[in-house]
Length: 90
Length: 90
DNA sequence: CAGCATCCCCGATGATACTG
DNA sequence: CAGTATCATCGGGGATGCTG
Image (tube, rainbow over all chains, first blue to last red):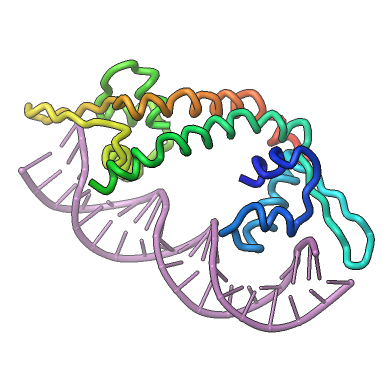
């Protein structure tokens, strides 16, 4: 989800911008997720040494390769999750 | 993963066949997962009343729509996970 | 064979508070 | 602003044993 938000931005996003883009995700989880994505080489992190500091995230080339498959899943969910929920309910 | 195994079989699979196809998944989790997939309308279940009983699973039409996006993810993983692991290690 | 029931534990996650 | 640290919870999931 963070990957898709960064892809949609088509460039860099700051931490707080990501938080806004991903409502319902706690700061802790977003922080952990970004650290993991960075460790895995999918996202790169750039710190702007101002006051207050600004931290910018962007997809790496490797991270960008993940975007199409993730989009496929999200599109499936948007199209079919209503049917799934209907079946699960009834 | 169960969905992809069923798709690969292009028909029905019995419980034990699914277990074999998905090494590393406990019986409990496979059972829970299949029940959830059935509840969600992605998988259908057919009980052959023999002794011992045989239970067959197959994808529904809705379940089949999920196959292409899942294949996309799996293909990404096969291609790029080695790079991810290398980055995470080094 | 295909599960369900039970026990148990650990790790993921939230809430809250603190920091450079 | 962009985190880290600490505490508490709670549920996912393994191990095991039983059953129609």
